[in-house]
Length: 314
Ligand SMILES: Nc1ncnc2c1ncn2[C@@H]1O[C@H](COP(=O)(O)OP(=O)(O)OP(=O)(O)O)[C@@H](O)[C@H]1O
Image 1 (tube, helix red, strand yellow):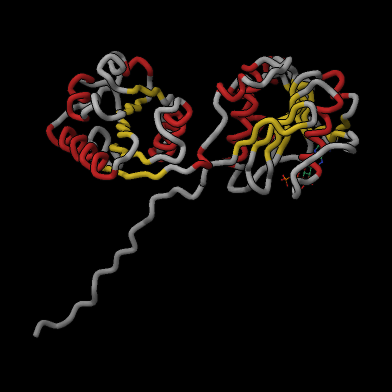
Image 2: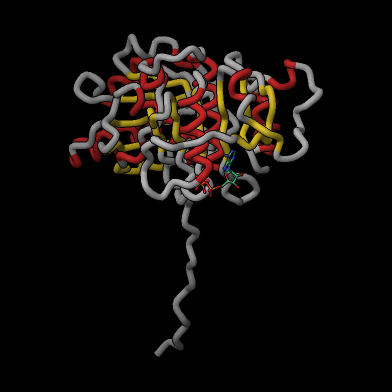
């Protein structure tokens, strides 16, 4: 179990965060901490009685007692991830759990430079584009494919859309469920790297298989996936007519094929657009859900600091 010390300095930083929160009328105070601590004291310091105070740490066990102290706990499960990714995840989760509005304002207090020492305060304005799929969104989807499989595929697709591969944007498609029928409309577009492996090594619920799929996603064609999440084939070109489909202007052949196959079969398709990173989910020929990737451009700016030219003393 990791712990976060509440030194005088750290307490002062939390109070400073509260002061900014109050001054700006922001929605919530987010404390991104290294581990468990005296939650009652944090609650007092942050005025949790009157403010929404979100506590984000990496593991659930470190949050014991936080909710009882009037705080809003979040477990990130992102121990090794860089600070900004953890911060983004905390904001996404908080928005998904409706602790904050997706276009709200948050004051975040965290250790930016030195572990254990709260040294940074940010006043963040969130953006509607931050919205992403939540399990709740997916639950409204009535499908023969279990939610667990859809969620794993959508999460993977979002990662592909957000991260690409080796600095390059990647687009791909997953057609999930009703596999036998889907394969009637599919042809190999090249050698299938998953062919010949046993089911265990093709199951997309396994993080290792997800990594393999990210590699293969760079190649042409679609993944045909069973309801249980097993990749039945990859690199498949779908041949389906798409007359009488209605689609948003500007979407190309990948998206047409993705929508059309869900009209001909009971499958659900999840497409990542190479040009925008947007993930779309189709069912019965209709666009059901859409995730726009978060801005990728969040990066620490490096200071280009040049000392002023020396002038000879008068
Ligand atoms: N029928 C299909 N089945 C499987 N994959 C397809 C199909 N049509 C196109 N693709 C894949 O989509 C790629 C991009 O095609 P295109 O640019 O027309 O699609 P798009 O819908 O505009 O997608 P993107 O937004 O990713 O560019 C192709 O190189 C191919 O790998």
